[in-house]
Amino acid sequence: MSEQSTSAASAPFGQRPLRGIAEIRHFFRTNTTPVFFIGATPFNLLGLDRWVRNFEYITYYDAWDGGHPRVFTPKDKPYIEFESGEEINNYLLQHPEVRSFMQRNGGRPKVAMVFFDEETEKICTELGYDLILPSAALREHLDSKIVTTRLGNEAGAASVPNILTSVDSWEQLVAECTAAGLGTDVVLQTPYGDSGKTTFFLTGPDDWDKYADDIVGQQQKIMKRINNRGIAVEAVLTRHGTVVGPVMSELVGHSELTPYKGGWCGNEMYPEVLTGLRREKATQLVRRLGDRLSGEGYKGFFEVDVLVDLDSEEVYLGELNPRISGASSITNVTAGAYSDMPLFLFHLLEYMGVEYELDVDEINRRWEDLASVDVWSQMVIKEISPQVEQITRGARTGQWYFDDNEELQFRRAALDWHQLQNESECFFLRIFGAGDYRWKGADLGVLVTKGRLQTEDPEVGAAPAPTAEPEPGEPLALDLISGSESDAVPTGSEGTPAEHMSSGNSRLTGRARRLIDAVRAQYAGVPVGTEFVVPTASVGVKSSS
Image 1 (tube, rainbow, N blue to C red):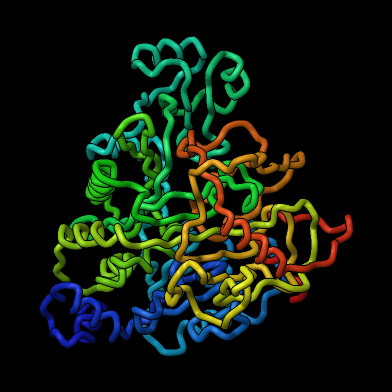
Image 2 (cartoon, rainbow, N blue to C red; image 1 turned 90 degrees about the horizontal axis):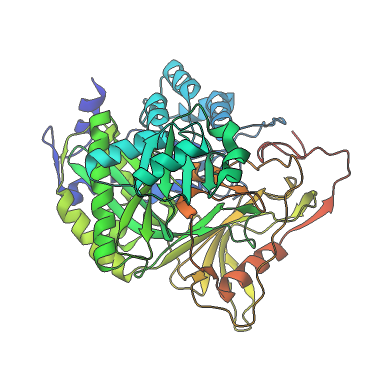
């Protein structure tokens, strides 16, 4: 029997297509196909096991120490210094304990993850797994800032005024930018790589001379510099059109959370993120880009960085992230998600071998209305101290709350943040714990709450938060959560990512700072001697095998 007929037969609707949300939800609640999310942590899709039968997580770190019934972590983990998220996932896929676990109930497993490459695809083919994601080659193609800009232009999803060119001198840049009306205060990007390393802010010949070796000989996107705010929007391209998730603001470069200037460190969703015409324009931009991606053979989940011009009503395409993102954790628990189903389930539908009918326009209208009543926030807490320590005690994973004295207390163990009711509560997912090492840039954990974490209101008499200069040759900690986090650049370095050319005057609220301080206070460690070499990645640093 084929995969498609097997899936269809598992539903009570025979061979006819699933019709509408109710039947689709029933299909997932009775699903018999094993589905796995694989990664260093389960954070991105944590909680989807509430919606999908036979959905499980395979992770390198176990934040629950065996207490989560749907999280599997192999016991035998000898020291390995991983250099990328792809290496982590490839290691897990080939681990004997993982292979045995994935085959225990039979069936052909379907596998999702944030980070993968062509080696991942090869491993899945050899092991008989379905990697339910667009191909690595297609993702690489779409990751190009030049390709994204061209596709957006074709779709009517315009970027900040720009030219796509290849200049080899400041004089040539001035001539082309002047002719295009961009001026000479510009932002130049090359096609690939971290935005911190491939985005250049140019105002004169001295800037050009400083970066010329990294610019000349490559394609370039040269943009007018604008006063903007970055907005994150997740979406799913389905056979019936693009379903657009809620709009979210980003937490970027807060020195209380991250040592990386321009580094993504969380998201907020609240009614005023975008309103009126700007919200409408952002939604239409994402839908147009999504529909255009279908012509490239893409299907499924993607995230778009939208740039809002603070000096006008214009909304622009920033960057495309053709992958599951760090914002997914919020997208999947919104009022819209509970009214219909989590956004990622639309992605699963495209890869489950089942026919279905769906009114995408109706869903988008309903989700836009429901976004006006929902508030969620999250922040990734990194180690910001240059001190290297072996952790002896870490914050517990579970639900926390503020008591009558405004002290943060542990309430109970919890599997995810779906049951949070108000801003007096929060959920903390521990990443690094006792036995691990922590150093500047290492991920300690992620905190999710119903309340706001940022404010644009000025803080009277407040001094700017201190920022630490990176040591020469200091490595960047490995991205464990989201591909967009690789846009981080060390605090104190030149330039910031283009999607954060101006982030306004957002600062953390007093409540957010209290939460951060309280979480950090749960950690204790012992200093490590100078003989310890800080690894180039933040995974696989364990005290024992």
